[in-house]
Length: 381
Image 1: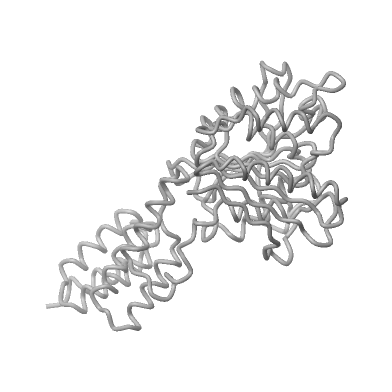
Image 2: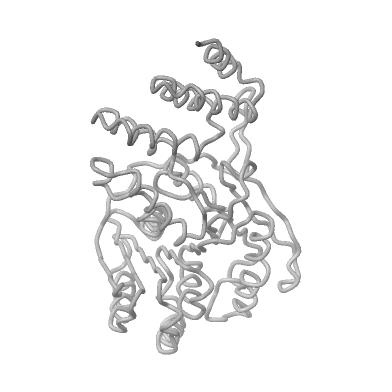
């Protein structure tokens, strides 16, 4: 894939549900709490201090043994809840299930100021991410797939620098209003580009954004970086950017939009919803599962909508196959066993219907509806 850059303003969510205004991760709403994550604390030998990481896990984490993509959010105390809440309603149809980790600051300038001013030590923080944080999250939460780094302002500058100086570390990087005008930033980025490992950038994605109310010079720095990278003609590197109208130095839309572009091909192409086949759905999710490092199944509602479309077209065999595929992919959904068993029974395949319901009762011996239907089928002549 050729290097491509499209500077445009893309549609984003009109509003984002902000689940938390503080660091409280469980909010009491009567009898049932609303929880979006928890806090992990572990000792960093490299930084010689305890670090707190805010972690949001996939909804199916406890019932799965799969590996997941990892999104690391810098300035976690401020941005973690936004990233989690803005992706929640889009998962799993537009985003894969993923582990989101927000890194809380202890000394922001020390860790993130790539210029090294005033005793900053970003090399140590980068080593902490590479040698301690990523392995820790991989071991604890099976976060061993596709990796994304997200940062804003000074953390955005760190994100850009990391994506160019160590491109093998992250598959995608999202930087909103990166501080490219910071004193000493320009020669660092220039050096990063001059010494860029072109082969390591193949397949990488870089997203930049800025606010339309930021200075023209600030916006130009983003555009200049884009033009410089575009001129390199690196095959397989994709870069996108947006300038958000009526946004200042904190264009929060950039985090959501960046993730939408990173995972842009997670959902099937739009025309599939009207004309696509089951084989095409299988193939699509095989491909994106390989790309994002997470063996995955199509969302339940996509399979069920395909099934309904095939039924409406009178394609009985395809309709049956889609129903069988749904049951195979979602064996925990016992209500679908009844649907498929009735299909078998209507085709005078009673033995298959009985066998299916027996399989469902192995999963849940207390599934009374399955047991009642099984008894009915057994009594039939």
